Image (cartoon, rainbow, N blue to C red; front, side, top):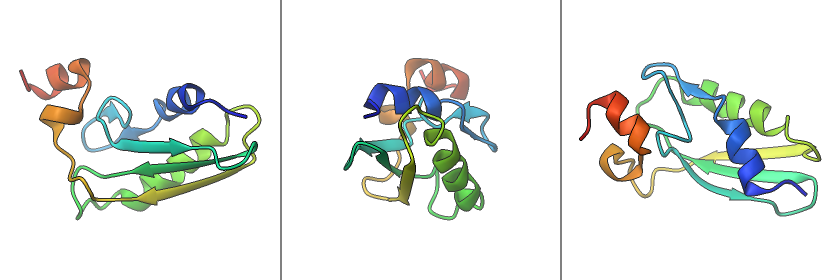
Length: 101
């Protein structure tokens, strides 16, 4: 069974192409579940509900999570509640890169 930390590390390879920061540091990953030993479900959001790259990020999340040892099935879901707030959800490094102090 994959751990949440292993999946998070894999998801750090997925970047928001408009911002250039990975989705984990941006705080876009809301939940990681392992409903069975070989499956992972990722709930994530986008920087904006109108984000044009949502389907691309979704596909990259599924591909990245599937690289974790023992994961054979990945499901991802875009959610918009709560709304993304970079001041509260970004890592300190991402806040610095975004100019949020």
